[in-house]
Image 1 (tube, rainbow, N blue to C red):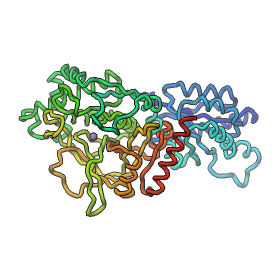
Image 2 (spheres, rainbow, N blue to C red; image 1 turned 90 degrees about the horizontal axis):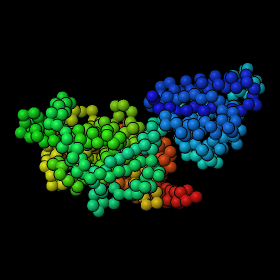
Image 3 (cartoon, rainbow, N blue to C red; image 1 turned 180 degrees about the horizontal axis):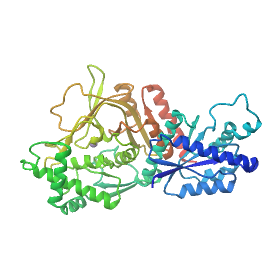
Image 4 (cartoon, rainbow, N blue to C red; image 1 turned 30 degrees about the vertical axis):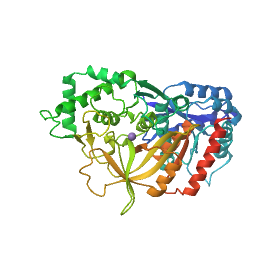
Length: 496
Ligand code: MN
């Protein structure tokens, strides 16, 4: 059953049954128009017109408690005195979008009369309602325009994707194999606050639980998966069946099957690993993590549960064919030419960000003290994209986004044995990096070429979390002030 967004039309009994019948017909037409071409996999459900305090309250309680309802769109077709909405709005626990529209696109200048005016008065009916929304202080989105317009549809679509992300966040379960990498600050944080604010449950497992599950995976099942690898990827000769190091590929396949079993059995959406704490694992999971990310699981290295959870949320918001991956700012190209960032990780970059066929290779890993790990190697395909992080500032969480352009590397990188992306951050590397660090942004991020900035903004608003954006308009002086004002705002807002 497709997840739903409920469309609630407001009016009142004052107008009589004939007008209310027209209200119902026209609001169904609006639902039909905004539903056409919506890319987000949701169904917009028309609900009977709301006309009094009792049925508004009931509708909001129903929306709040229905697990299939992701959010609510409201529209005051006529005039719906907004004191009727206050209690209902105050009870609403789902994301709210206020669509400010009307059924007709153009005014019928030559024929307009008071009957038309009575029927089509959202211009002030919606303003009356919006006052109540502002008083209840719901973190909602307002979309204005003709319901069939591409602009209106695109804003609704961005919000609909965000409701999917918010639903994922509210139900998110994350398995941590091992704790935080020793002495690292930004990957740590308050999991109780995260559960309160985002709904996510972060659960710890000893890494040897993964080892135990891995020991139950048969060689035959692992070999079958190795055959799949050979079909899908360019597997190096030494790892292929019959190759000198095929056993390492079999072990990587067992890691994938074991991780998938744990995710499925525990209904998990995301996980972390920590190369300092691998127990009896023979290799750091690389290929296995990449394969699970490609299937929609969030991942964070070094115990980084926040980036992993954000990855699962943004993957839920990624349209089919789009790319979203765990990423880390690794090293710079200051010039000549535009300054660039080379992003990668020890192993764990998701192949959804490349259109090329990944290679599967085995190379030494200088840290962790284990056997050489198997990994996919590829270069991210050029695209407009963004990197996003979630940090714990102690008194609140903060989301930071940087608009970037993923580009081709200046030259081939024949000796780089890991998957990677090269990008030009906006507005420039110097301003981007300065702003990112002033905001306390992490070295781990989620890179997405498919989730729009608008959807991320909508998600942050639903979560009531601070979101600072670094883009082509960023100027450091204003950015510093924004951080200062945000600190005051969030301390004030969270404490009243
Ligand atoms: Mn890392």
